[in-house]
Length: 356
Image 1 (cartoon, helix red, strand yellow):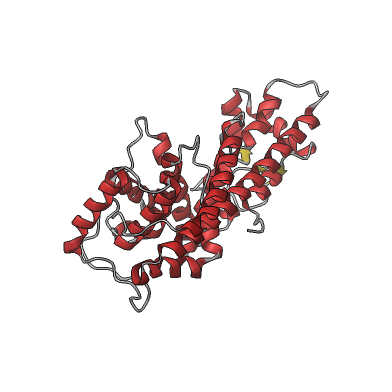
Image 2: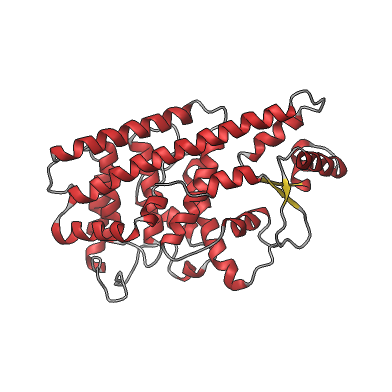
């Protein structure tokens, strides 16, 4: 790296459109009263879609129950494994933002992401946080064979230098160039695809100067999975950077527009909830409870009790009252000892597919 490739004029319209929609999305994010209103739903959906790209499937309902209480969910060990994997992805997405002093984009950060991703799951035997010490192949018949171990250190050193050097192309373009190179190196025994998409979200935010981690590509890559894989492969075999970048820039436009639509619907729903509370004489917490639902779409009486420092009966009565207002509904899924409440409207906006 950098690649021996010159920017073609034909890519300008796709880049300008992608940057326009990304800037519009960032503008929305910057002016949200609470950025988590949009960020948390986007991250939850990204975790599910990136994992399903690798054949790890967990329903939104399973993820919800696992988040409420991992020990209380009545699922078999076989079902629990993919749920934990997707939950780990969500945690890894937030890892860098939650670090007191954010690590720069580096090999150390990449190892940390990998370690968080594989903690206590079936890939935990694949040396979490450690670069591979053996050969791997991609595809059942080895369609692509990454660099042998004796080349790995030089490849990774070159990759890290590329991450920090002055960029030749637009930062958005550079993020997708780096994404290809990471996947081509394939530095871990397992989890490379998911770590690569985690890194992609981070580089887009940092290099494009976004106010938050608003853009995620996994839903687009999943919908066009065959083309995604073929475009990566054609860079290796034919040096087709133009086809790859056109595919990615189109995806940025679509995913940015999708996130804008979701945010608009969430804000409309927030206004609607406020209208339902107009004229109701109630404590101040009554206006905060719906706000908290946009950060986590579920709640329980124990959590409400702790959050608002009220008694358990009061917390339970509050949640039952929100059920009557049509804001919450009882979560009729398998929990052993506690009743949970869900805002179905927020949950639906988060996970339903838009036409991209």
